[in-house]
Image 1 (tube, rainbow, N blue to C red):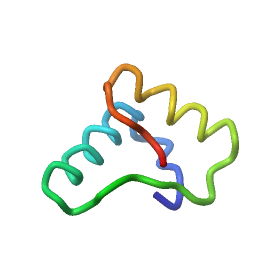
Image 2: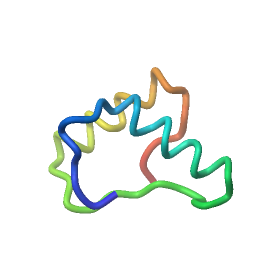
Image 3: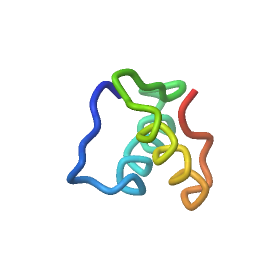
Length: 55
């Protein structure tokens, strides 16, 4: 992911990313251009989704 989509909840973003991994279109998810607080928010949201999160 390159930029934050402030209008979409992290849970929804992680569901989409998980689908990409299931379909074999992505191996893992990384980020760039995220501020530290945005990275923390993204990782915190993974606990409710029960997925690995950012690599």
